[in-house]
Amino acid sequence: MCGRFVRSSDPEAFARQLGCPVPEAPPPSYNISPSTRLLAFTRTGRQTRAFLPVWGLRPAWFRRPSTGPINARWETAAEKPMFRRAWRQRRCLIAADGYYEWEGKPGRRQPWFIRLGKGTPFFFAGLWEESGERPTACILTTSAAGTLQRIHPRMPVIVPSNQWENWLAGDPGEAGPETPDLARTALEFELWPVSDRVNRPANDDPDLIRPLAA
Image 1 (cartoon, rainbow, N blue to C red):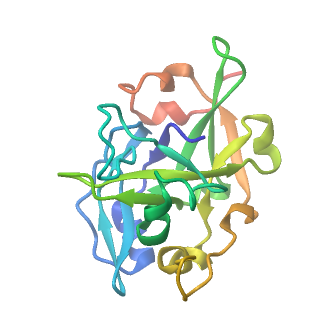
Image 2 (cartoon, rainbow, N blue to C red):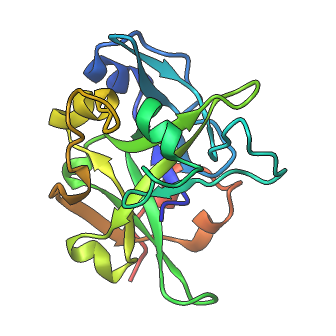
Image 3 (tube, one colour):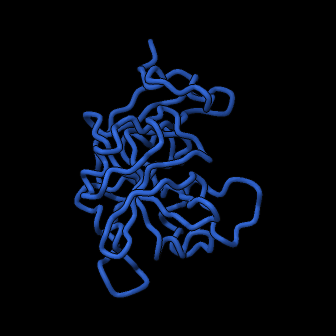
């Protein structure tokens, strides 16, 4: 799964890659947690636009007071009632520079920071919904690949640059571009253990991603 992540790069860096206006975005964060605002991009007609959904998907019919799901399984999202409309009609790219995952059993869990090689900013594959006053979103996850498997069996789906447009435009329910098999795209990662200060959402500073001293 993906329960915390980092967006430290300037919003302009993400918007420029997608060819859309620079958005007003939340400040950079080293500890983005559920129920906070995200920097995301979606397609309206032929235009890509930025928007700021809350992390935790809430379709219009979702009436529970709790936060909606923050993750959706890539393998089942197209069929699940919670996600299937968003899968077909409301996909997004969620801006990130890295994410955290926890290794071990409850009570002895070690947090790790994971990013693309060379610290390259990237986009998670996301789904979003109109949810009252503010849109909401979740991150798609898949089986962990390579060295990430020893940390956790799941990982977020990261969309490679040559598939950004296909992901936003694809609609498996109608004629049009085929949905790329993003879940099996090979990517190179860097990862290292970090302080358990990240466990507390109120902690938000660059030291959270500093490698843990041996």
